[in-house]
Image 1 (cartoon, rainbow, N blue to C red):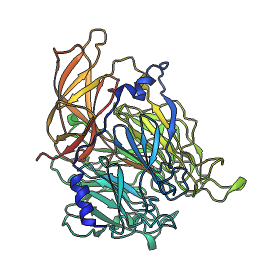
Image 2 (image 1 turned 90 degrees about the vertical axis):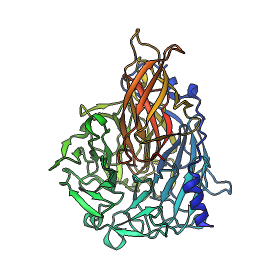
Image 3 (image 1 turned 120 degrees about the vertical axis):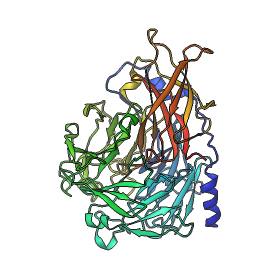
Amino acid sequence: MNVKLVLFAFLFGGLILLNDKTNVNALPALQARQDPGSTLGAFKIVGKSGVNAMHAVLVSPRKVVFVDKLENNALKRPDGISALSSEYDLDTNTAKPLGIYTNTFCSSGSWLGNGTLVEAGGDKGDANYRSGIQTLRLYDPSVGDWVELEGIVPSNRWYPAMVTLPNGNVMILGGSTAATGLNRAEIDNPTYTIFPPPNGGPLTDTAFPFLSSLLPYNLYPMLHVIPNYEGKTQLFIFANQDGIAYDLESGTTIAKYPKILGGIRSYPLTGTSIMIPLDPTDYYKPTVMICGGNKVYELTSPAEASCGRLELTTPNAAWEMDEFGGQGRVMPDATFLVDGSILFVNGAATGFAGYRKGGGANALWVNENPVFTPFLYDPFAKTYKTLAASTIPRMYHSVSTLIPDGSVLISGSNPQGSVSLNVKYSTEYRVEIFYPPYLYSSTPRPNIISLQTSPINENRIPVSYGQEVTMVIQVKSDGGNLPVLKACIIHHGFITHSQNFSQRYVYLEITNFWADSSAADQYILTIKLPPNPTIISPGPSYIYVFNGDAPPVSGAHVLLQQAA
């Protein structure tokens, strides 16, 4: 394969606008609102993922891509071999196989700024799949399938983290050089790689010794770009119980934060992290929240029932702890909802991430006592609310992601080394949609008609930092009152192993708003986008306008980039 040609096609061809038409009348949240009202939300099983959902990423308004590891999934590639990746259609709730031919076990991913998805790392191969541990994979949604660049990653990567950088490149950080239940020095990979390489040459590794100091709990480190007005590439990097702020341009640690209280937060005592919604009225002040995990590497140990919040740019910052809604979770997922609240879902009440030991009636499940009830967290009131319960255990290798109608897709769970059905915790293919309480609100939901004069979700709409964009919406008056509108932009991220890499929520300023005399219940508003790519990464995101507590019928798919 001509690697240079493929890279050119994806790095520049990725700018081709995506055709991702949406039938808004078929959106499931519209149907949900016709059900009896609820303050707790509701789950609905809607389809099957085809492959176990080890990874999930929203690639267009009505498509989600799942990625699994090498195992005997029922969904087959055209050559009859079990698929490792599928494209899930949110309108038909069906999955089709995608073309991955290297082992993706415990890899990672993030978006390039041009709108191409990058996935990197994996594990050794077998008779049907080649080794993927030094493979980099590219997915352009306008093409709809994967291209694999084998051997391009300079060192083995298993359980690495990834993040989209402000310049639109991605960082691949850490991991181990071989699969393991617990990392150790001889297989540790305390380095990072930037793709595409800044100098245009081959990919290279840069030493990052901070990770070595956190052994054995340093896999899938938590990774967030720190927003700032200067446009500096600074990162919050956390593993085990420790975090730093790192300046990528100078290669220096610029802040060392105190240890988080409570247990370990990294694989296999897996917790989750999320950056609280950023607000221009608060100067995009960054606060990271880290939740769950466990104190002891022991299968009967109760999961960690605490969260810590840390204001990253506050002098002498200290962790503000809470009790995580009163329920410990190892392997929780944290997903933004359209209104800025955070849905915590999935996970187990005991144990750690990994596979069962043994089989049959005497199997030892290293993660058990699944937590079926989601928590809804208000990041400003700092309160938790327990919501309606699922009936499906979602533990190791589970995912959740916001979809553009305001509901949440949840799938996965496979706490065993290969596909196993009809056991206590079977390999799980069922896809659920969770309808949050705001979808049952009586408040009229806005329908976004256009953005920058373009109909939404026919193509990604190009927008740029600092731009004021014009949006037309329809929303019925509520008792003759004008709608109470707020706006935000969300990058939905790449979800795996309780981490949502590059997920970001930013409130947007509505700078003007008036009634459109050309149509009833129609309004025109102008919205100002964030000033620079440290606030939210370049690439695909969704702009939402919500009316009081009611989200829009669908967010507007955009490609956010620096102005030419």
